Length: 342
Image (tube, rainbow, N blue to C red):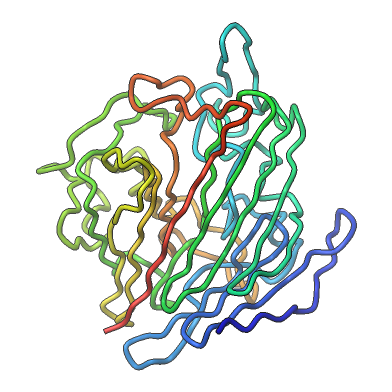
């Protein structure tokens, strides 16, 4: 049984209120905000059975609206980068909002992470909905999004449906920063993944080619301490891991991506997803962001696992499709986060 209760709302400095809901099934507990579909807190048990929060967050709407790290939010209408913020559908050219190194990152300055979603409850979780109007950050079409967070045992399910009335690239992802032992760094965490390919990138993070990870520095086929990646040549330009790993085409079935674990707390997180890629981001530029209790967060203090379509997909059809959703089609993202302790 999932117990769901409303928490005291926050005042949105832009006007209105931001709703807060806590859902708890006795194993996991999650606090969700209507702002950005944000997961503010996620409590999971450690090897002693003690629950503690394992995601980074903020204490106020003002702090969330000030930070640029997308802490815990849904990134969209297109997560990751679109080169130069430009793409074409047939003979129609579109210019998007440009907000990072000449590209459109995570949907632009006013992406879904800054929208106030409608929030309701389900028997086992919460449902958020959003309407993104035609031309929002330059994206074509009125886009309707439904986001479900559900608790089942030791699993958090994230399921997203979206549709549009004009053909548009859509790729949404949950952008939580996980820290499985509440320390000031996740470099002591270990990551193992079943993905055997990754995308090489140019200096602005735009994909250039599919590469095999086996035998390379990006080979995470066995549990690898994140500290060991720091200083390696492949991670110099990004100051740490910030790479998109590819999963085999699966006809939208859930596939096991890999496991993040903390030897200190005994907690582990295994991610399953139907998305073709997962961006692994080591919080390389997190330093200076204000977190809970006004704590100044540090570089490498969290790790993001972002299931998604291929970065720059509308301009990279030779890699894995275009991520274009046409009128009458449904974008479907489902990911399962399985938490264990030992």
